[in-house]
Amino acid sequence: MTAHMKNHVLKPLLIAVLLISCSKSKDSPGPDNGGIPTPLGTGVIYYDWANEGILRFNLATATVATTQQDDVSRNGWDISIDGTKYLQAEDKSGGNYDTEIYTLTNLADGTVISRFEKQSGYANHTFPKLSHDMKLIAVPPTFDDGLMVLSLQGKVLHNLTSFQGKKIDKGNVNWMPDNTLLFSIGNKICRTTADFTQASVVKELNFADWGDLSVSRDGLKLAFAAGNHIWMMDAKGGTPVQVSTSSQVEVAPEFSPDGKWIVLGTDYHTTGPFGHIWRLVVIPADGKKYNVDAGADQKVIPLIKKGENTPEASDGGVLWR
Image 1 (cartoon, helix red, strand yellow):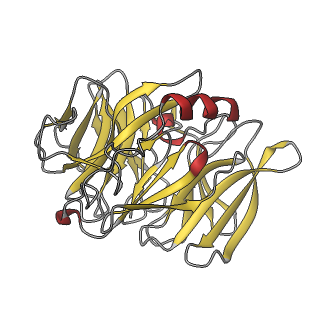
Image 2 (cartoon, one colour):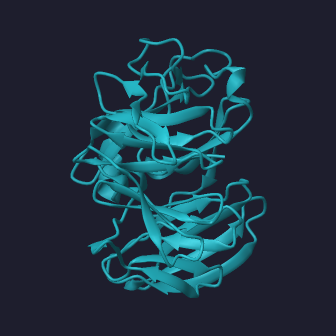
Image 3 (cartoon, one colour):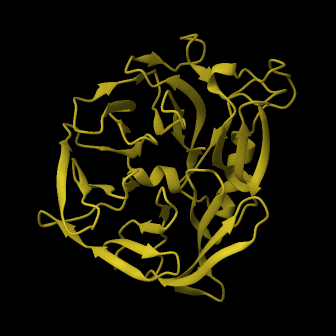
């Protein structure tokens, strides 16, 4: 289980197979309120789904709309903490696989705030992340570059190639509220200083395979996937506790804006050589363990669209804003 699960883009030929074998139920209506209780508030959960693009689930109405149309050239995307800005990395047209186009836009009207080219190396798709203050862009390592910090105009401010003699992992890069960065090397979670000149180890995990590192908006909690389930810990390096269990595999945890809930993918399974999907459910982020098998625990909230009876499916990035 690795962090690339969150950012996978399905190939066109696989999409057809996926839609046939894993289509969402539209024949049987679900609960009138979509199954979403009021304690979750009025936020929005964004997620990739097959050839429908980037969708947004409105928790107040249990309705789904499209935020960004499907785009096979899109490699990675992010939405600012306040939900107003959209950042995208995409292949440059014309078969130039060494170059990506980065675009930052206002979500409300699509106006472009910044647009620049970045040399990423052949097939080195990048998955950029906006800092909390929306002034910096973090780009996880590629084959050619380390962990890069860019200005909104694309200027390379820092390029962190290694730590403790090891290359920084391609996944698990997250901004903290104070504009420091979390990253990983092997089983170690690390954190930079604000000037990106030094770093320290936050926690060394006892998992051979883990990923999907996520941080709460206040920077106090971390969540990640390991041993087929979701774990949570104090961001200062506390002991991880398992917060999900099931007969299947859980992936891609993301905190709610207030840090009281976690949306995650359950029933994770492979759909082809490059494809994976999962169903979205929500659990309290209180450090207790919840069984996310369907119907096993009433405190587990399936993300069910109004008029349907199965949780929404995702095959890529998931954000809660």
